[in-house]
Image 1 (cartoon, rainbow, N blue to C red):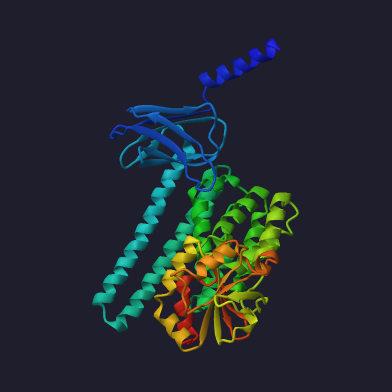
Image 2 (image 1 turned 135 degrees about the vertical axis):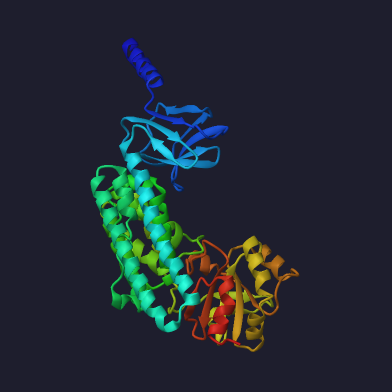
Length: 463
């Protein structure tokens, strides 16, 4: 026992005397209060090193940094970037000037800054072509402009090809380091084929299908960099903007590429789910999320917790989709009459599932009352707004129908027999939840947002 305690004390002493990570920074031109080394990742816990400022400061810790990319900060000002490829030999020394960072003992980081300089040079050449184009539009006759633009386009393609070749060579030369993955993942896609450029749908399809062609799924270190975060964010933005169920197969194909290892797959899935799948996300795309969940449930390495959660998610969201007929339910109106949603006779119905005391429901109701086009559609008898309270509290319902905020232009209802809640007829995890329905109670738009109501009314000529 005594020997074990002495051994533990010796290990602790060794860690204190010989830190696992040491970052020595010289600041010949700057002055700060504190210096930090921080991870970039937004959605996972990252390590941080901190020290009071001095012209020659050393940041150290007994625990090595997780391989990835780190931001070097003077107070809140970014001073430079540090690549960490391995948990071993984390001893870095650098000079941080105002416009230049010089690493003294890390060839990988030196190569990274050289790479950034070269990419900036390529982009500068492309910017020059753009300026020439803008100037030509102002001064050149139209008959000459096309020939000139063709020449500029050829030069731009040449520069882009040179840049991709440089990136490919740099990634290959640094394939064992994080730098290789950073460069590989950042490599620009080749220009799409000519027959794709002039076709909007094919152009969209090309980028969704090939977006991750250069992504290094086999290197989980890339997830501890801003490159991965930015790549996933840009991809989600494309999927949201295009909103095309035909593209879901490409999302699933990308997820299958990520299955090269479980960590990459789960990280990628989680990143997409936060934007495209979460109920609270304003950018969710249900058909894509459903395709993701179905594919995930066929993944043999999926752990039990994820299996349960994904099955539950799929059970909620894979219902009441656009084009399907909603299930019927009964409700009592503010006048005490009993009816059902199928008995509402209207060309269109805006079904509004809510809780009377919910702050967001209150805000949305207040916004809706001032919608001119919505009010005209109601007055013309072409649209009926049906507001439904579906929880089991008669007092809440009674207080609501006798309150001053109730809108008499809407049909107010309470699902008194609790079928909505008990039978999970709708996904009511987030309220308010609205559907735009046609005369047959078929879903025109599931989960219609408040700022989408009037555009849909205008598009469908419901006024």
